[in-house]
Length: 118
Image (cartoon, rainbow, N blue to C red; front, side, top):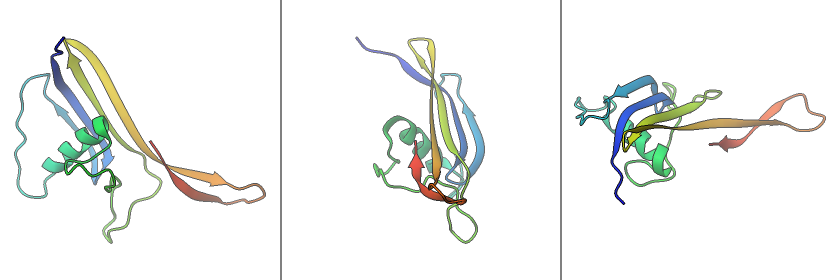
């Protein structure tokens, strides 16, 4: 049985330099236009990461984090992508959050970065 799936909304929060952005299509067809380096590929990367854990180049290992002016990943910020899909007219929300994991070893007063969690 074939399903009718349409994108109603796509939300980005701290994803690849985009502080906050919402694309609302209402389930209708939409085209995204803009000059170079305005975020078109970032929107596609966000949607692909949400669904398949890869970017638009089919790479699993790509930089999700927001970068500072000196090209270093900004620490201490969660990175989120969520979408509302209309599946046969029924609304379904998907959400993925990429967070830093900090742990404190026994006897230590200081937390240390120990990786990421999704």
